Length: 63
Image 1 (cartoon, rainbow, N blue to C red):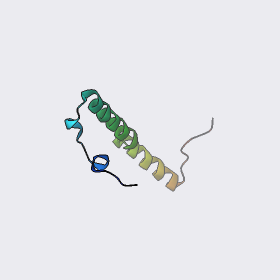
Image 2 (tube, rainbow, N blue to C red; image 1 turned 90 degrees about the vertical axis):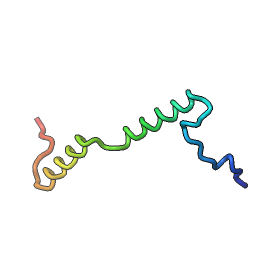
Image 3 (cartoon, helix red, strand yellow; image 1 turned 60 degrees about the horizontal axis):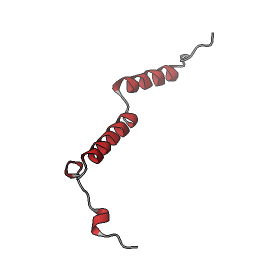
Image 4 (cartoon, rainbow, N blue to C red; image 1 turned 45 degrees about the vertical axis):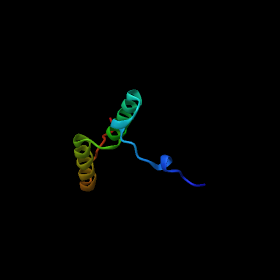
């Protein structure tokens, strides 16, 4: 199956004919990035937990 030029053409969001569609793409991109890129706080928490486990410390204590 051959791909036409219009199927593989990249159209920047800023040049989209429909502003609502452009907005939807930008919001979707922002949500994807925020969901998949760790924050500084979560990265520090992961490092702290890994360090504690490596030293043999208990991370969660049973009551």
